[in-house]
Length: 86
Length: 494
Image (cartoon, rainbow over all chains, first blue to last red; front, side, top):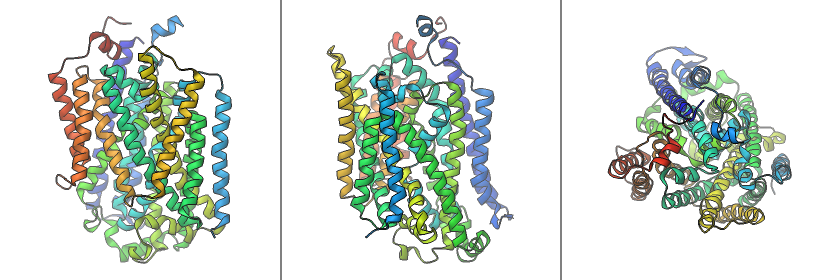
């Protein structure tokens, strides 16, 4: 990758990381305040207590998995010019 | 007289930490000193990178004050604490590669090095170094005090003994081993924290008569603990503030960003994002859940246990077999140690690399490696000593100091780093106004107790700092082409 390609790729990765944050915030709202409206019980607890804790955590893991698998790319951390010279 | 059985595992753990410090120093002898001491020769793999980032981020308040509040508030507290699952993937995903590549290009070992190169301003760099040292002293004091208080409650030995014991240990292994020792001890600390959480969960469930009994008791006697707003104890403003303060803005904490300079390759970075998110989620949910489960054991009113800070120590002493108390307390103390070590090192790098070395370089002088080594060790020790002395007569509002420092660092660095590294138009005037003006506004509003809509002052600090940045960047001149080309390669470049 050239320096420019690397920069554009890093900008894209940062943008998608921000997008993952937005999605997680949305999920967090639905899984907590949203699910608290439901009268459902699991493991002797209201549903929202589970979805807003373990649910949000699993969602974060899923989003990071998608990021690192489909958006993030491996690249050399040295500049190509530097590598050529030594 | 204290509980010797509780002290022995702790002493063994501490000895291990010091051992790592000496081992790393022997291994590293001969290689480039600065790169080695402050960023571990950029050689961290994914697992260690994840663990050191999580351990630095998770402090003693995550393990003592936090779960104590969960005991009081209920599941609303976990709902709020879980926003921290974003902390690791955000900092590594947004800044990880950018900082790694730039630091190699600029031969930088600190975040301040990068800021200096981006905005071509020694004054800004000096201000950044000053802010780091100032706020880090606050955070580090809070960690020392929190750790020593916990030590004294659980083992029965005095507060001063605790302070002396792990003050000496942290300063020794950090001063001697540098970044690599900090990263390795952080990894041990993170693993120990997880083991501690599992042990505590197991014993608190057992002592409370099992999961079902505890939950039935909570539903019957504290129904508000099962509501997100906890009967008014968890206002929406607190949720919002926490997203900013311990979630999103933590990406700009210098002690987190510097980890982007320290890893070996992008495969490791990607792995660290995933491992870090798994680990930080487990810790946050696990320890706060233990706080809620403690209702099965601590059934009285809060006043009968003192403050919320006493809930977890009291629970440990009540539910754990005496032989395991020493093991259980290592977890929270490890959280404190791992944060202190990283802060000490970044503060020391701010003094040695960002101020002292730069001053000499400008005069064409180059101090010898031996001199640098001595000075680095001396400054790490000196900062440790100052903080230790402050902690001997602790201010009473520890967690407030911690949060104050957190907010101050975020106000100072968030926009300077984010816009500086991703916005071509960002310039020196914007960064100066944002870092200086934002921090002053933040400290003033804190000092005067001024709040908007009841929100923590970080919301004012971070907004003002953004406005200042935009105004400065639009009014001032853009940086010169050479600088911009270094940071934002144009199409004609390779």
